[in-house]
Length: 314
Image (cartoon, rainbow, N blue to C red):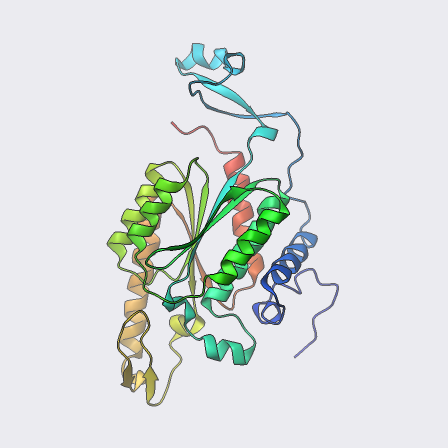
């Protein structure tokens, strides 16, 4: 295997390389630095007062900032918003249910990231990236209950609190996705960008109901659907014992007899999740635990840039 160039800005974005870097805060810092150094243009906006967009008027806004020309044309009250005032509020919502432990022992032996480690690393990277853009970031980890909750704030000391919470949220119980997303929707004080990291191994109706609650409250939502390569490829052969997670029973069987049916059911499931997210107006991304983290970070940045320049929603 060829050695990676030490000057390669993406050298920290390979999950197998990142898995060898501990603790989580150092892992995230190095990954973000490597990603940003490889970009041609910095995503960080300056603190200018350049006009960016309008937003709807709410009682208490300074009347001097109302755009009366827009009111004359459309009979709608909107307020001029400037670049220094358009800072993002990002909320990281990370699944810490037991199914996120899949393959933990195998991945530790191989020096790679299992699902929760991958999700926590990606979330920590986005926390660093968000604060470097002078935006605010919060965190919620969950299984059947909310396990850790950090309000959205900015600054590197706040990122340390998010990383500590991710470290403490060891996967251990079942998921109650509808209840959790309802709690998230009701607890967020202001509109923002909700980033959900989960394997989504849940019933689809409660998942879509929960996501619709977030959209109803006018949050932008981005789903990172994190699955292990084994879950996507089903590479097993010979008699295999599958250990059930989240109170499911163990199963001893010949996986070759199940492979075709499993892959067919998997494709139906992925199609249902993708189409359901699209119908609700949610950006959906399937992520493998072997994917380089630059893909996750780039998707966030594209969403961030498009949100900054999005037209006013009516």
